[in-house]
Length: 423
Ligand code: PLP
Image (cartoon, rainbow, N blue to C red; front, top):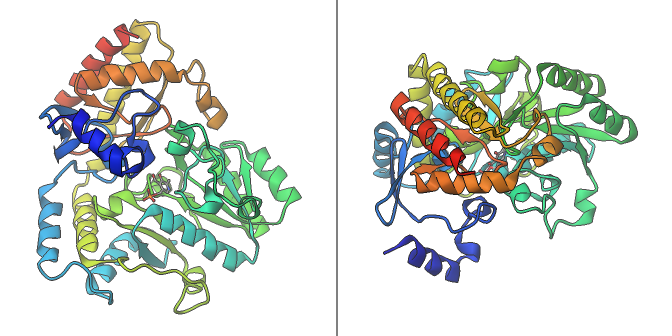
């Protein structure tokens, strides 16, 4: 069994051989390796090669692959059944675990994907505000629902069609696109249009890692308060990743609705949206906003989320430790880049890190697009050859997991130094 033969088989039956386009190596060249298993900081392909994994399933695996405690929770829960289609106390337990950390959120509803969470949050915000117009920011990705696939980051940018084919013009026309970290662009749209909702990744991770400026975010909150606009903080990626309370710990700015995903499921399909009762009680069956899911809140997924969050809360220095590894890595990358005369911009927040092959600081999508993607592609290939798996796109974020050690990071830095020598 080789990566090549297995991928060829996949290509025959699955479009592009992948169930999510970011997994393809389209923008970096070549084909993805086919995974056999993951353990801790490492992922193994079907040929038995191992890679230090900075993708970590695109964020969820904060404790690394096949974490023993999460695995046990999943197996224990599975013994009682995989899905009930009726409420179970596990849902309440995970709801409480999330909500207890956020003084400004009263209620939460679980979904199976971040896409569903943001899509439902938008519907809810529209119902609450009574207005169809929404603002999103260029380069932010909020999943693949119609209203939000306009100038989107992540795979949509990687493959060069940031607004998807198949999205009806009638839907897209209600989505206005502002410039990240540029409050004037928001003011101009709000002045000229009837806007009821603004959705933002407060720590943008889908155009590469671009944290919001504190002043920009507080101005955004002010505009929403003044104009009675619902502010949705999309923390599907940054929630429990940047810090236990995501961007709230970094900026102290509350969203009216917050969406979660990735880490809150510990590797299982869990996402959620949460808000004050006044907003959340508009959802069916209490209110007229319809939202549903056959497998939403299933016991196995809830058990994984409970195990993941309980472990997070039990480790006092978790984010400090993860951040020191993230800093160690980007400092190492910067040093290597300097040594080889390569322009590199870096960022990190909590366990998230990013790097752009760009001359100037990156504060928004246009800045990110100035990166040298050819150089990135070569760097990526050189790192894969050396057993380090980075996200196969310039416009993604990297993730540190608890299973990584300083030794792992130093190995990755050494490999990056060698890779950069070949760029
Ligand atoms: N929102 C953000 C900020 C994300 O990063 C993602 C996925 O990467 C989503 C929403 C969509 O989540 P999912 O892929 O679970 O549908």
